[in-house]
Amino acid sequence: MSTATTPRDSLRGLDLRILVVDDSPVNQRVAATTLEKRGCDVDLAVDGSDALIKHAGARYDVIIMDCQMPVMDGIEATMAIRETEGRERHTPIIGLTAGALPDDERRCLAAGMDAYLVKPINAAALADAVQHCHLRNQRTPPDTSPVHDLSPASP
Image (tube, rainbow, N blue to C red; front, top):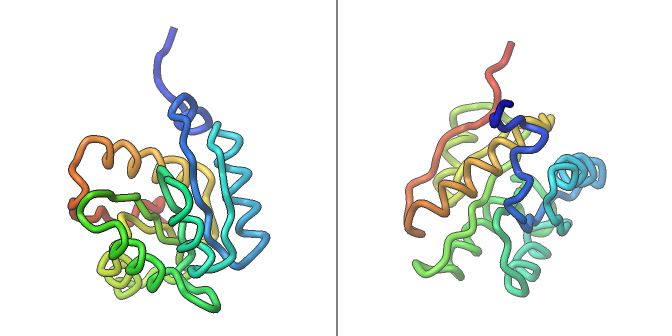
């Protein structure tokens, strides 16, 4: 009997509460469905401002943050979250971006994101990134350096 964890069940048993922040209802639905199928409890926010309100009112294990949104974008929201958390707390934030340029990666990581994925959302890559960031956060103190792009390699 194999004890290997498959991408489909890699998040089961972790009891993760995740905030998905995206202004697109379609992207919200894709991310939420992907994570809920893997046993996660998912809340939704429509922009960075909404994310700040939800983050202030609840503890999330991971935040999935779109980078480009109206009202307050993901970069701004991430910087604000990092400011409010200080050194006592660190919620992993995974950025979602339509851009795959080196400058996009630098912006995400400089803002305080722990990782980023390039859209369109790949279910397995999202689950792997959530698991990686959550487990890394459990092993390391809050002031860790960011990881890099966890998107699968392009064909």
